[in-house]
Length: 463
Ligand code: ADQ
Image (cartoon, rainbow, N blue to C red; front, side):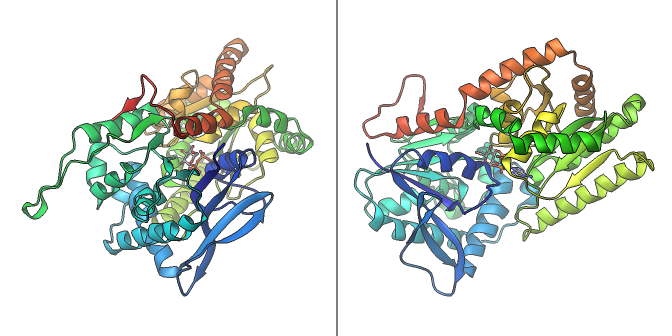
């Protein structure tokens, strides 16, 4: 069986993991021969030409260092101040500095140059996420003929948002150099296909660019998942149970509404707190009997828009406290730190409502983890944004428009009042879907399709 080479921006580190990508892929490489390749996390004066290998908790990991300037242009710049906001349809939050693109390409070139000598001809390469869109082009330019697949963890933008991204044509041409492009959801494949079939070549300076040929690239949806059985076990493990008891002591008979997210403007956190505020305002009977716990560790906090989101959330939480808190009751708790999976599983299990309301999200693994952690005899209710990829997997959740905070407030009320039979029915359907779409099946189905000699399947979109 060919080796698998996984490439992502960051390689996994030691200790607790707080990102969907890392959680999912660590597992793949513990079961297949191969290695993981990416940035070491170190910034140096000179760009590194060669990778260093390290054994990290049993994983073979190849790493390169980057210079501070290159890293800034590639990571905080082009990837997270242009691609992330645009792909999440937040052009208002994008900052466009044209020199960032050169840094982005330079880093992709450095990745390719350091990776190439490590490759065997039949290695299958699986590239992850928007930081590395040009990697196949760069590898092919250096002579790599391997099967190369790309998986986009975030949503694919609609045509107008895509056209607003500087160099979008080159990026789309880069995608055409992969054998397989995987997306989270059918809506993403549809947006990609829309571009591929109706390309609007730019006419800048009278030059009409050539249509991109996607005939060798297969594109399909491979919705990622979690390991719901593992979350079920963790939720009743000693560490999970400890968290349940700790929270029960703190909450008494208040019912817990739980949000768990990276602190990111795509996650809809201010809207979520506003919806909770409306729930309390519209339903006086619920005051003192519910509690919102929002867990949101800061991420990418060197980027101004992330600090602003953090400030907004602080102010919103303060406002709700000011309106509704009493000397002996607090309506919410906001915790800015990450927890290990066992503690999270305990929190999920205790929560009567899992509140997952991103404004736009590739998938959202918290929704899967919440479902996995429920007590089958007395399950909680998932309130889920229709703009998360997870909405395609979980139609039995209470689906909401997160921009409409009245609607989300009403969904919260319905969730809190839902009879046990309906909760059980909905949860069983959600759990079946979470198991069907678990992370093992996700990785296996992507890698099967990427395997040498695999043919496009009928019904998939071969553009
Ligand atoms: P993220 O945007 O990071 O991932 P998500 O799918 O929700 O979003 O994954 C978050 C992961 O981090 C989950 O496994 C969760 O348990 C963990 N996490 C979040 N907050 C935590 C906390 N406070 N403490 C500990 N762990 C925490 C990107 C895309 C998503 C896509 C994933 C995977 O944006 O849409 O689902 O990749 O493809």
